[in-house]
Image 1 (tube, helix red, strand yellow):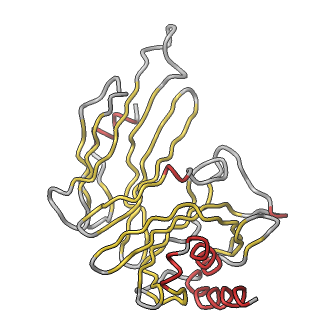
Image 2 (cartoon, one colour):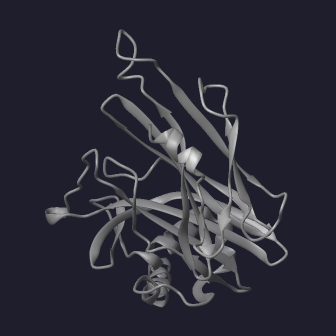
Length: 267
């Protein structure tokens, strides 16, 4: 009973954060020491930012931007630095329809939460977050855990890359989406095309087959809050240039994809 009351108190303390983006690092009632226990940490975070656990649906249910969401823990990374430890939290789930229905069509996105917490002494501080239920993925789900990577995206800055893609009419397309911290928000910094093939509509008189495949690397050479991205052709590729440089536009807060790269993946 004591644990249930403690978690309820955490939920009530953090609940207002789910209604609007934080304007600064915000003190939560989650004890910093709880970060050493993943089970307790996840339970406190999920109840605090979403709501109580629903045993029937096997997820934490809460309302985000007027829509009920069924959310679960997805990935957790921790970075230690001069300012202490930061927890980079990824949650995943889906919007609940009438009768708690789950829409899982090909074009139906899942719901993605991205949260950054840091050690504030006795309690954790909220550094930044996204909407807590951003549309992402397909078939009613966000990409799998292994589709997310925490990357150093700038001097002292970290963010996520998310691998996603699309298949249709004989073509397979892959994209790396970059998320980063901007003030008190987690935002999308760019959607980088990295893969394309026409395996379902080539050969046997249908035209030449191709594979265009690139990996992305954050280049620390110039330094700064946001490193340029280098797209490097992989061994899997059958055509395309060796690479592209994708600079960061600090005014737009977006990676500026070169026209040549856009053209290569839009043929």
